[in-house]
Length: 94
Image 1 (cartoon, rainbow, N blue to C red):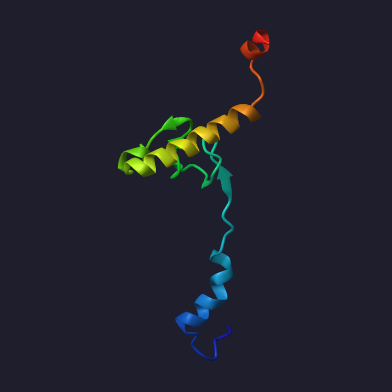
Image 2: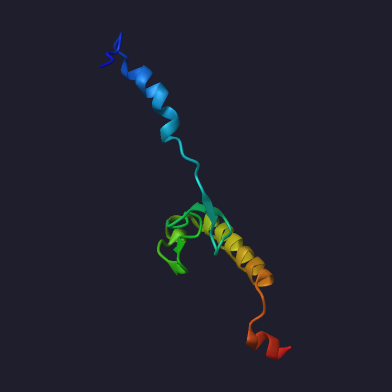
């Protein structure tokens, strides 16, 4: 049976194994605000998860920050409405 000639230090072993632990991060796009987020997590920008508001993001902000954030959210919703296909009700109105 083969016996190692010298003891490998923890640092040496860790350096050789480092490539096994690095994984690529896959980001999804939040359907509400279109920001990149990790999958299966609450969006830190808008506080929504699976179409439901989980965190009230605007509660802890100052008055000035609230206005800015609300404008961003409205702009994102407006863009989303423009990009989404027409529903049957919208088609019947036209």
